[in-house]
Image 1 (tube, rainbow, N blue to C red):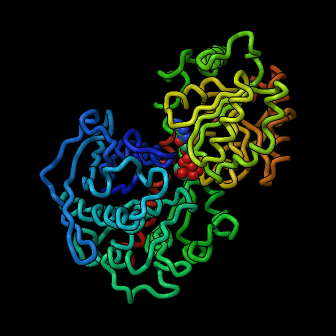
Image 2: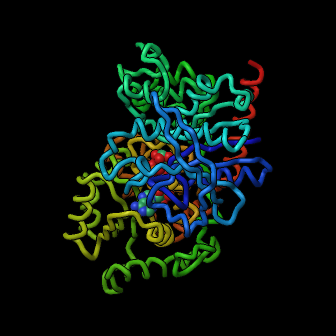
Length: 491
Ligand code: ADP
Ligand code: GLC
């Protein structure tokens, strides 16, 4: 199959969250299965093109936007250590900025930036003479490609046998645009915008809804989230559209790439270990604490709890703020926090560090190296999300024998099961209601079990044996793609 992946994030070039990990491993796996994927990404100013081996091509795109045309240049490279082609769309006016979506506020012209990018995806296929079987769009930023496929390119022979698939990574971000301006930029008449049309939601143009309605098939990143988003609490207002398209909506659980995330080969770890040498993990904990000025006289053997996250309301940090301090104050655990985002969370974790410098480490920012070290050193990882489409952090943590304490929602519910000391099954701790007492009780259960050697080792082994390999996920997508192709080709 010829597959176009349209995305605004891709490891190792541009990442704010798990989306970037997924758009990297899927094409790598697909290529191993004999498929022919290409990836199209904006050329952000912060991508070090020399370092990653990107070269400008002589291909200039002709992008109709409103009543004029814009002419970005295409760059080409390959995903590191692979033959998967990556095309970058160069247009500095839109993409040579400090952030992907904003810095830190959303850029006010994101409608124009992403509509332009979507049109550029279609035109890239044209100049490359690439005949896609599948156009795979990720999240609202790429969703307009699916509308274009069924409208402006509907009669284009090159796309005659192309199926459009939307993958929803996070419904909280939908792309709300002013209709007159966005319809015009996308080359549609404002007459095509009316209440109830496929673009419209609450009187605004909604890019996610547009993608949902125009896609041939829709996937999201776990089975539980696929069920949850049909209900008002989780659908962020889109339950009607998702239910209308319900027969074409499926959950495909994300996976992780164990070649990059495995404690026996992780170059970032001071001490590598595997399921049979788990005792070495403790040395990583000592090394990490030492790095942050916590020495052997500072009670280093109590449980270390890690948080690695975008600091947004989604991630349940309000529950943490409500309950974590007494655990730290009374030396029941130490905390290490890595993340950035909303100021109130940043302030809170800075406050905890300043009050308990030997008990709470706070690192505000993005640091991949430190993320690996936390998975390889901490005893627990805390993910009490209000909603979580899938979540990769718990999957990474499990592989490193770091026990997740999670809220039972979305992909967290599909990957973490409560440990039972009766049966010896289970790989973590979880709670159901979005409630800080329930969180505190789950933390308490975890901290208690930590001191019981036999159970703790069994739990860690269960965790490390959990398998979420990317190959399985990639195969599941191929099944969805076949299903989408059957739909298009039988219509
Ligand atoms: P989301 O995509 O909602 O942020 P996921 O759990 O799917 O959540 O993915 C988060 C990814 O981002 C993981 O790979 C995690 O290790 C990484 N990550 C999150 N915050 C940071 C940070 N501050 N520094 C380094 N990596 C981070
Ligand atoms: C989103 C979700 C997260 C998911 C990731 C990759 O950012 O918040 O739960 O794991 O996308 O699909």
